[in-house]
Image (cartoon, rainbow, N blue to C red; front, top):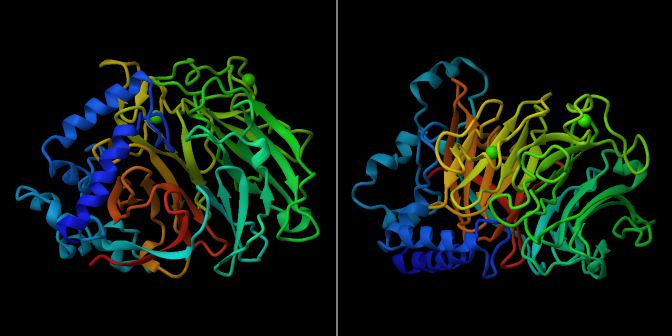
Length: 474
Ligand SMILES: [Ca+2]
Ligand SMILES: [Ca+2]
């Protein structure tokens, strides 16, 4: 990539970073909170040396205590221009990246090589354009092969066999507030038995700015929801316009996992992150089949603890923006948006529950309010990056498709502001390895997984759905 073309996304990144108050995934508009000042100061510090800003985006600095053993070049050639003379040691050559670490060598005896993010690169293949502020991608699991795309203003669109259908599956623009960058239609989950019961759930910001999770059914037409079928499952007051969370996922246990942010503001203004009496700042686990509007699964971790609401599965989250279960293992990956400094990925092995992910005591692996915080009982992220590499994390999926064997078992995660996509996977010794798999220009609001396990992303800025194709690192 020529320097001139490189500078365009960098300039864009600078603009976005300047506008990014660290308060959310979808921040693009100028913010006015005090947090903005901090973010701007940070940007000024990182951006002032000119090309250094480029280096920062290309060479993210995940914490040295986690997966950062390799700081590979991005899949695009952007680094060639951007990497300064001092950088070569930090950017392994393709050959070096392709060589398994010594500890991995014995794997030659295994039938399948362990996942290695260092040898794979991603390429974006356009599937469909013309989407209005796409914010999510969900497969219905009914064997149809369709993808359902959320449009933040309040529509669900269908992509069928590569074509975007004209008529929306659902249009609730009149019920949705999407004035804030983090408001709107934010989540969709199809019932595990959708093919039989036609039931699906959505998460949106209503006209009062509060979170609504409601259940719907499909009509006789498989490409048309029953517009009169809404049944509210849960409403949650939102004290501010940001940190609404919004994602909905059915776990392998058949329960609905609901991620809620801390209520917004900045620095946990409302004190919800560690407050077990509020549903905000937490991951909920609901049984939407056991009773109306929902039942509490009997094995939820806090049912016997009066200090924590029974709906809560895990707490200490700031604004979980996309989480997913590994369809093979049942492990849960939660990306949590940071304040002004660190973005993080949390890992919950299958069968967990009851975790405290630390916000606002911790931001990433760091005490949020000065040194020496009490970390006992907190679950640390498996990976983080600082704001030289982006400003708002977007969690993805573990690849379990069949088309790209080298991508098998690798968790994809990206950043909304920088467009960087990383791959994470545990190495032979259990430590998490990371690598940049692509440097895109996308305003990456969401990844998605189709029924075959192929992965996609949406770019909110261009309104485009892309399929992610993998290839050997060049
Ligand atoms: Ca309880
Ligand atoms: Ca955390």
